[in-house]
Image 1: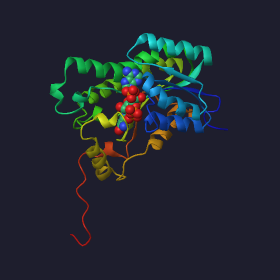
Image 2: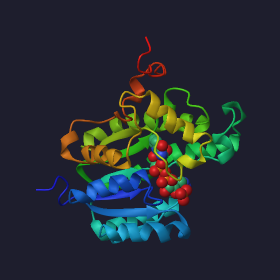
Image 3: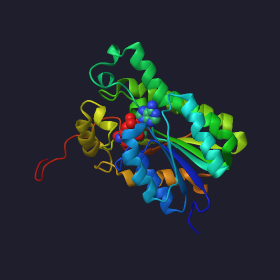
Image 4: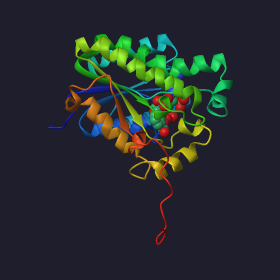
Length: 266
Ligand code: NAP
């Protein structure tokens, strides 16, 4: 039997076919999970709807996670269509372009609030109304990045937001554990997506990752998808409040790897 047969997952954060959330959606679909999607704005609906329909989804709903009324509207549709569900995926982040370039010290109050609201608080905002609709054994997970722990050039306010997101994962795991609901994060290595293209010097991050991590390569969207499948399924039934790294081992490296010696060199 498929790992997620009879289960239902609601996925926030598919923008297009390159989205990490789409890699997760495909892995969950492969293992028999029924999927629902949210999208931000009409322009994205044009991209998200065909993707969602390609995996048989009938639940495709608009949602700006900064607007409580839109979140409530999503869950009233979910309750009508599904009653209860099993998996909640948070793959959302946003910061002003100018706050993902230059120095962190230049971050405006407004930019800080926006990044924290959309990228960190939104996990609480979409979890609270989900709780009454989640089955025991349900799994919630969010996407994060190592820039939450160590300084990553130009990641700036997003690093601070991801640190808050990861702390939020631990507090939510503690709150919801007694209800049998697990909450985790996946810390993914750099992948070229729409959101990533907003980070100044992102190409250098990709090059650095491939040159310096133990596997000497960047990671694939489908590899994050498979980690999502693990966290969504009973295979991770005792795992909660954790950050799960899918970064080709980058987080274990204290320093950059010296350039490989050329043949014949001592
Ligand atoms: P992506 O495809 O651009 O997905 C980001 C999603 O967030 C988009 O669907 C975006 O919609 C949505 N979003 C932004 N503001 C929103 C709002 N107010 N309400 C609802 N949705 C909103 O990029 P991605 O790289 O797959 O990002 C997914 C997650 O993975 C993010 O949390 C990101 O930080 C994390 N992550 C990415 C990488 C990487 O290297 N790509 C690495 C580690 C972690 P719009 O496009 O309309 O703004």
